[in-house]
Length: 456
Image 1 (cartoon, rainbow, N blue to C red):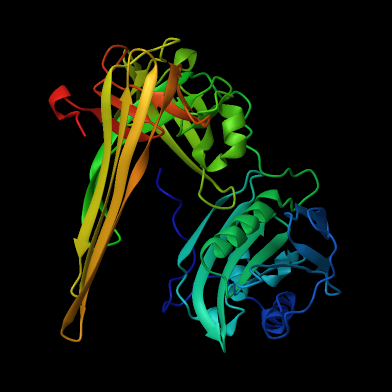
Image 2 (cartoon, helix red, strand yellow; image 1 turned 90 degrees about the vertical axis):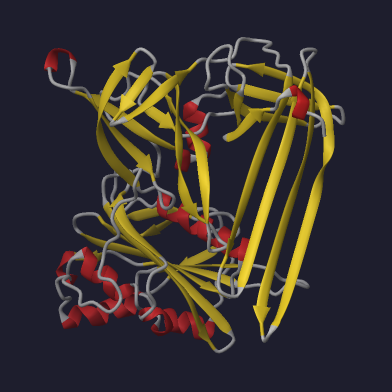
């Protein structure tokens, strides 16, 4: 589903948002004293860790590992330090404003002002930006900016504005010297704070709650999507993805098969970005064509993107818009397979001064007596030219062979290794009850090898 259109003026263009009155701008600047935090890194008392926080009438939950305190100006500040020991670490700061009243201007005007509070980032083009609706129906807007420096400190920011009708709530993440896993962990914590944010009494933390009257579909449906996709090496890859839609009658859907077998509701609670809600309209006694509205969780903040398309029920599945999603039957209990299936991925490309490639192969052998064997390899290479010379690097790794017993039933493949390890993967065969030329295992396409080519 296409993301909601990005909002706000692009860098270098004049904003058409309603200007904020000058007296109110001074008040807005006081709400996010980023420069003070960056220069002083004010220490926070070790309190409020993992607890519910309050900013005026608003409430949110602070993840474990963070400390935070309310400030005298009505806002809230939190901090988490990363690294330590032999590893150079960084710091993440979260700031939550008190309600900025409607008299200060529109939510867009307030957001545009506060997103540029840090001088070094003010003129940076956002790396990501967008808008949508929260699970409580409040408009939300966000952007992320990276990267700037102040002395020896690298700086990035994520800014979110939520409009509750009475005014604007602004939440900010300021990243200082954060890289790799630390940066991802800080963003994940900030996403959790925003998802838990309840601006008004009666609001709830993020949860996928189908609207009244939603639901009515049931089953697993698949569609083969093909096309060209740019890669990290400057080239393009041909991709063939078996897209999945799993519906439950209560109004939830998922774009991944729950491997655990606990049902869509449990899966969506653990992995909300796989999921959404749906509602049917039209058809029946209402007449006209049937339609489906799908509200899908975006990649950040629990934002819900909505799209409505025509729906037609056909003998082999569901046609949503122009795309036929074929219904996939579950595997009978104690299903057995006989053969070797191969997953292979390769990507390559080049620019004026560099080229690179990577590849990965996985082989899975399943036998009628319930045994499995897995092998595989991964490799990568790169070359670069500079100053009249050429340098290259090639790496590769072969996956140790694994063997054991397997069980296949429903939409699950359970592998129990001879070493005692166990792994549960999603599994379906899109060709039907007897066609095993293609198995989709944990979202990846495994093609059956001819017996002559099965040796390795």
